[in-house]
Image (cartoon, rainbow, N blue to C red; front, side, top):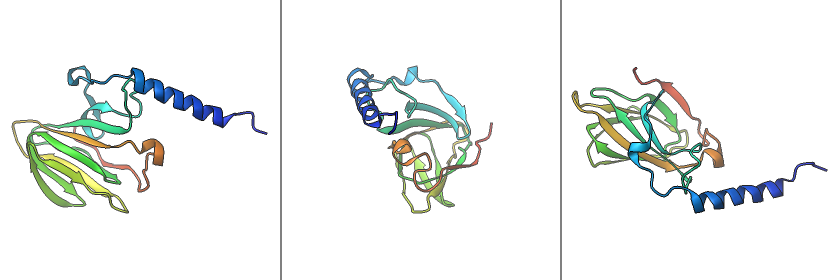
Length: 158
């Protein structure tokens, strides 16, 4: 007989989720979020599995800023992300195919059985580009690989 009571643990998790929905923040001000330099480039996270003080956590939601004439890192993922071009102009490579975008466009990264390889490029030599991304938070439901593998294939330039 197990010494752990996993059924009770499920109820604890349920109660924690209920409390988070009841007391978590509803507004997440852009100005309060720190910029993060990482292997993908420069990002601000609105929603992330480690951000526990929001009222919701069903999504991953972040802003990627690309310097003038710069690019992000290159990633392989399952796809299924949506990106809103907040500022700038450039293109996204999806499996090597170039897709042009500009301010106010919506970028749809398709879900493919073997995943996709993606990199974003800012073609403006003077202004930053910003893309807001959202995707379902499948990290806990399916694991970080989300069924197709998640690999950083190339880092953004420093």
